[in-house]
Length: 125
Image 1 (tube, helix red, strand yellow):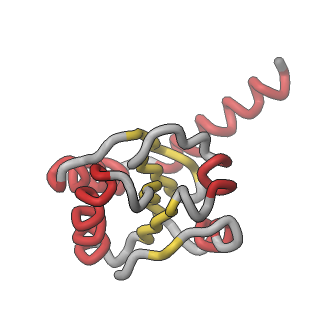
Image 2: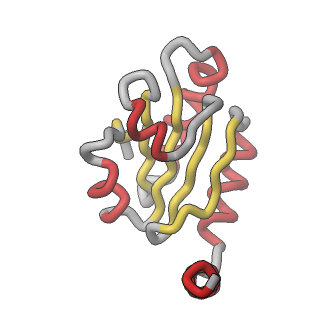
């Protein structure tokens, strides 16, 4: 599947429509971002069941700011609308494939239970 250009306008709808959303925060002037681009595009072709979004931090500073992006490239992964991974730095193709495998293997019932537990702690604090 093709990569989707993410904006502050379409982010929420894209997230809601995706079981898994992987976001590449990047900028055109960033060398590592340009090197990671083809790796990300290949993964998007290989995994059509996953939504791959690209956020140009130069064009979308509000969306990048919402995530506190300070380094690019930064990869963020949502599963069932829960942020389960976020890390700056370029990943080689093998590491991205390994990450995708781990994301697919997550027990989301446990993840949701942990999120609920953390939310209750925050409310009661």
